[in-house]
Image (cartoon, rainbow, N blue to C red):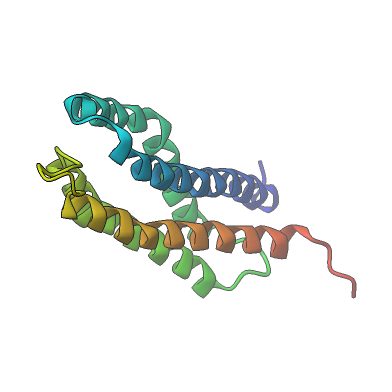
Length: 158
């Protein structure tokens, strides 16, 4: 495979994984919002099953998307300024750092959704509301990758 076609395949794989991650983060947010309807007796089992389910359904493609952006810095698509690729990488670094240090930590502490008085656990409410930031950042990252694809694959009339 020559260098001229490699960036095209890399971009196509990156488009697919980026858009997959956008769909996954939206689905996860909507799923998190439904956790309040899981009975307390079943919540721990449900949460553990959900957590183990995302290991194979989200993490591998999120890793590929991250690596794809790193590879694009080395094999930059034409018509794309390097700062755009750095921005795409920065968005993902912020998302994954936030996941490791905030959302993941919060989820691991979450063992009840409803307090004894029936109110929602404040940690759960905070996770739901702050996770919209992660949704927005990953969506922006996917849109940026889509813009890169359009910039590279749409023929320009000159």
